[in-house]
Image 1: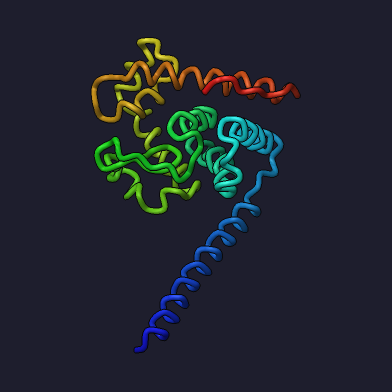
Image 2 (image 1 turned 180 degrees about the vertical axis):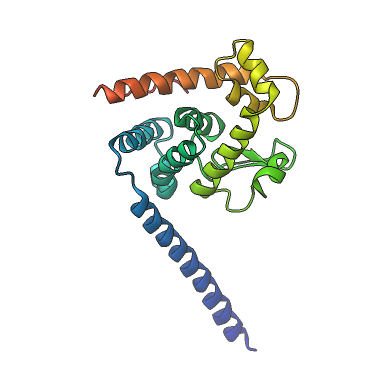
Amino acid sequence: MSKRETIALRTARTLAIAAAIVAWIAAAGARFAKAEPADPEAKAAVEFMRTVMDQVNPSLSVEDGYCASALPWAIYTHSGQSELDWRQVFALAWQESRFDCHAKSRQDRGGAFGPFQIRRVWESLVGDPRYRYFDPELAAGRVVRILRYYQETDRFTALYRRGFRFPLLCLFNAGEGRDVNMEYCRAIGRKMDVVKRGWTDFRAGKLVAISIN
């Protein structure tokens, strides 16, 4: 095979891969468009989340428009299916990645991936978190399974009885360790307060202004 033919073959393969990626994005967008909420409460929640995301991470809609559009609906639907408060799951994405679906961290052993920074220590529960970690649907499905797991533990009950405001979110950071990261608990607690106030204002027709980093 000549050099020209080799280059042509590589170019063809690159174009084929690019076309496959474009097709996947288009298909994902079509699935999301069909799944847009019809229920007024769901529609309002999704719109509110997008409003907050635009203020917290304004570049997201430009750099990853699909994530900016799809993540709120994925959070709402998966939270509802697992009987979790979507506001807590939303605050978790804010705390962990500022809603960045492509976020990756090497600080944790094995890494942490996606908008919820899911670590490989949870692999036995949710599968390999590296697989399409940027997919909002997969990420939301994985994180609610983790939260439901911790919700059924004695540690959750103990933290609740000790007066922790958001014990489930604190446990997400603590993992299987016995110590609770109080700094993390306070930080995500502040975000939850902002989300709760913002949601109340949003439903009342007031302007939602985010003032916490």
